[in-house]
Image 1 (cartoon, rainbow, N blue to C red):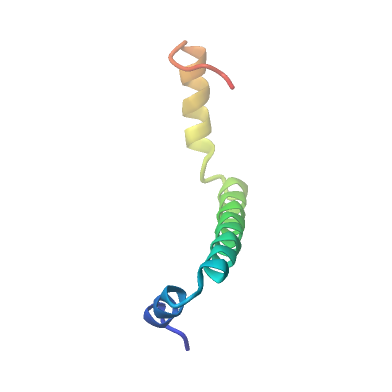
Image 2: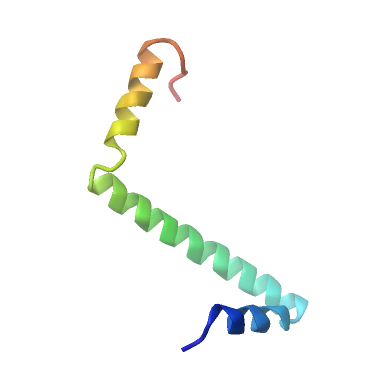
Length: 66
């Protein structure tokens, strides 16, 4: 199994061009993982309380609707 320490060492050794490719890949990978987690949280209702609170703030004039 690869450890974070091993990955860190490998990343540090990448040439600039490969590091740029890795950064791009990782940014896309990380964004997709975050989107999937957000979708799971929405589906499970974990954000419902925050949505209701935001709606109350907008109705009370303490926030602006997007």
